[in-house]
Length: 180
Length: 260
Image 1 (cartoon, rainbow over the protein chains, first blue to last red):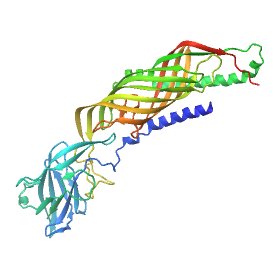
Image 2: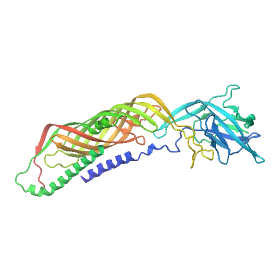
Image 3: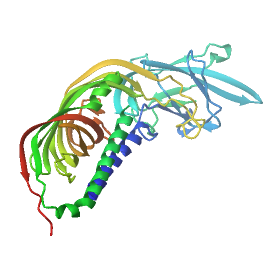
Image 4: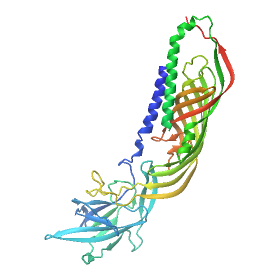
C-alpha cells in the first residue's frame, strides 16, 4: 500500500512538473530563427582590408526609425522584410573633416525570394532569404542616391554579393561587401 | 471547477484509507468470533465516461471531446482497461494557432493494490496502457520569429538590444495535414470509489511516453488527441475524472483464510 501511494504520488509529481514548467515555451536566443543580412565594409583601394565606419546609421526607406551604431564597426546586420520580396535600406555615412561633419546617404534595394520553415512551438516559423541574381545591368542589390543636394555623390564606391543565401544566423561570411 | 473536483476526490480517498486502518485494528476481535463472514468478489464490466473531457467541452470554447472508459475484472487484483475517445481542440499558442482533430484508443490493465474491507469494491490502482491516435491538424495561423533588433555594437543584439525594427508578421493560412498518427505507452495511477450501488467515481493521472509518431511535413505534432500536449517532443500528461457504472456478471465468494 505504501509503495502504491508512493508510485501514484510519483506519477502526480511528474505530471505536475510537466504541466508547470513549460520550458519549451521560451524561444532561446541560440535557436536559429529569421536571419539578417551581413554586410562587411572594405577599403576601396585594398579589397582585402576591412574598413570601419563610425556613427553609422541606416533605415528602411519611408520608415522614421533609424538604427544608429555606437562606435566603430566594420560589419553590420541588416534585417529584411519577411512579408515582402524587396527591402530598400538607406545607409548614412558620416565623415568629419576639419570639425565639419557631413553625411551622405546611399540606398541599396535588396530583392529576394523567401522561404518559411517551422522552428518550434516557442519560436514559430522563420523566414530564410535567397537574393535574386543580377540580370545584365539590372543589378541586385540596386544602388541609388539620396535626395538632398549633398547626396549628389555616392559614398559607396562598389559592392559585391558574396553569399546570396541568407539562411543561417551568425555565420561569419558576409552576404554583401561594400567598398568605399 | 476541475481543481474543486480534484480536492473532493482526494478527501474521499483519504477518508477511505482512514476507515481501513480502523478496520485493521478491529480484526483481532473478528477472528475470535464464531461466525466467519463470507467475502464476495463481484466480477463484471464497468463502463463510464471521462467527466474532465465532457466538462472541458462545455467551458473551453476551443475544445470539443468525448471519452468513454471501460474495465473488466480479470482476477482478484487485475482489470483489463480501455479508453476510447474523440477530440477536436484548437490550440491558440503565441506563435502558432492550429486545430487537432482525431480519435484514439488506449488498451491495457489496472492493478488494484487496495485491500478492500469486506464486500467493498474500491480501487487504488496503478496500470499501463498502449495508446494509439489517428488524427489530422489544421494550421490556422502562425507568426514569424524575427529578431530584427540591432544591438548598439552593430552586430547581434546582446545585452541591450533595441526594439525590433520590423513588426512581427502573422501569417493567416489554412493548411491541412492529414493522416497523422501516434503510438505511446501510458503509466496510470489513481483511485475508483463506489459512491452508490455500482456507481463509481474515479480519478487518475497518466504520464505518456511517445513511442513513434507520424509528423506533418513542415509542422509538428504539438497536440495529439488522447496524448495531450507534447512536452520536449515526446512526453505528455493528463488526468481523468470518470463516472462509471458497474454491470455485475458473476460472483466469486469464499471465507477468509484465518491467519494463525
